[in-house]
Length: 140
Image (cartoon, rainbow, N blue to C red; front, side):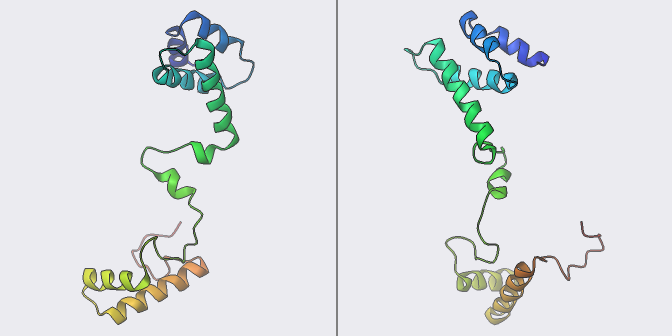
């Protein structure tokens, strides 16, 4: 247990500290974090046992499915767990709308914008979105 976790644990009520120390699994740090969160969200009539059970169940849910419950602050986890097909247009937009946006943004005709979209879709299907990108930087 690291020093920050020990200091946080020492701020909890004694009964709650006993529940956490009696917890036999190796997820004490996650449990202390979840207990602190559960204490902040606790209602007036909640007992320490109820708070502990909520925290323990949150830790258990997280360990069973971390991709669903673990969210990055910047939203990168949402992108990583997105299971949509990369060849599909963004949700809510059709190719026609995308072609209009590209034409307006880049000053090309709508026909040329549709060609650009078709080329990107072919690249996505092949798994090579950056072929032909000539920045001089080696691809990873």
